Amino acid sequence: MSENQKVIEIEVLRYHPEKDNEPYQQVFEVPFTDDMSVLQGVQYIKDYLDGSLSFRWSCRMAICGSCGMMINGIPSLSCQTFLRDYYPARVRVEALAHFPIERDLVIGLEGFIEKLESIQPYIIPKEARTLAQGEYLQTPEQLGAYEQFSSCINCLLCYAACPQFGLNPSFIGPAATALLHRYNVDSRDGGKAERMELINSEQGVFNCTAVGYCSEVCPKGVDPANAVNQNKTNSAADYFLRFLAPKGGAK
Amino acid sequence: MSKRRPYVRSMDGWWRKNPFFVEYMIHEGTALFVAAYAGVLLTGLWRLSQGEAAWSAWLTALRNPWYIGFHLVALAAIGYHTYTWFKIMPRTMPPVIVGGQRLPGWVITAGGLAAAAVASLGLLALVWGMAR
Amino acid sequence: MKPGLKRSNAPIFWALFGAGGMLSALLGPMLVFITGLAIPLGILLPADTMSYPKMLAFAQNFIGKSFILAIIALFLWHAAHRIFHSLHDIGIHAGTGAKLLCYGLAMLGTVLAAYALLVIGF
Image (cartoon, rainbow over all chains, first blue to last red; front, side):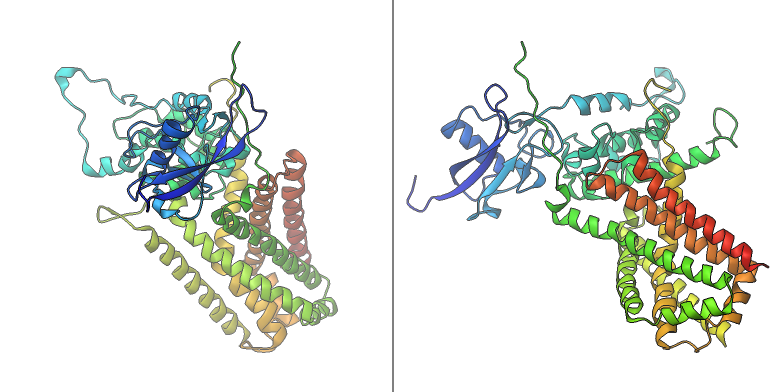
């Protein structure tokens, strides 16, 4: 370590279920260079200071969605957040808010995976086509209707930004609704009626109070708040008009 | 036996922990002034239904400094409601497509605020016209 | 419908919230200015703008009646919905009790306003 090596303090919220009753803070002194991300800082801790530190990571380039953490209280991908932006102050790292802590920076994902399954995140073809009939064609406008929502990487920063999910974990939440919307507005899809049952339900979109922070923290430019709120309009229209429309629903 | 024991953190005071949430609570709080002002109007309507003496007494009561103070604060609060209502609107309304392009958020916000300005001036002009 | 999925009745309250929110955003500040500041302080508007004969005539007119009822009722429903959610936000999950109190008061205000407008006559 050279003389002018900069050292930053990283405060990590630790929790090991086999020995800790509740989480506690632990501070590490980490030498860093200007090109080091918070993820690299945490990796330094694991490699050189405390091998028992647990966290998820994979791609280091903001596409796998596994390294989300609360960094100074803000839901962030630790791979695209840099230590130099906090130095000389201490940087606080904590598991994503609103999720149960499994161990250190690792959260429990079961709740979200169940939600992801429940929205049927795949195209349910409107009309069956054989291979010989060729591909489903789509205009740029039809692509534009869902494209941004398909950029979701399931990093869950939006859930960590959503107090309504924190207050009521059964709420379907921002990312799952954004993905649900992505398929519902796809011109090739015919599964909307099935998915709307979830939107209309007590776990659905009306838990949202339009805080809007989910869309602020999204690292991929998705606007989940817009997906949720568009579906409030859809759901309300369905609620009031279902008695007028013949069964099977004029869309 | 599983050693898993997921720890669920408390939500106590969540809205104090992030400036974004503090702002959210403030703009939600404007509802208290909307409710109170609706209460003032309801009282006035009630007095109106009781005849001229009751109505005039209510009009006089509105000149009380406490009422003036309340209305000053209510003006600020409901004005802030107007601003935040249209600020969040790009996120709450379906996309508007003009000429194949999605209208940017700031245009929707600006359009909403312009609509509020026009509606307010229209209302003032209407009241002024009816009073003359 | 999948088991365990119960349709939410929120659209009713959400629609009233939205209508009241839009109305108060468009007209709220100017209404407060007119009735709460300009008239009591005697600025900008003629002194008799809200005199008894004028207001009585306004409240007896069908359009005037509708306007007064829409303003009072929708402002109340808007506020009730927001306050109900804010109680949940700050950790008061009173559920049915809070719901009855918030929406009940909005309903009471609506009924009182409608009653007063009926008493005023046509």
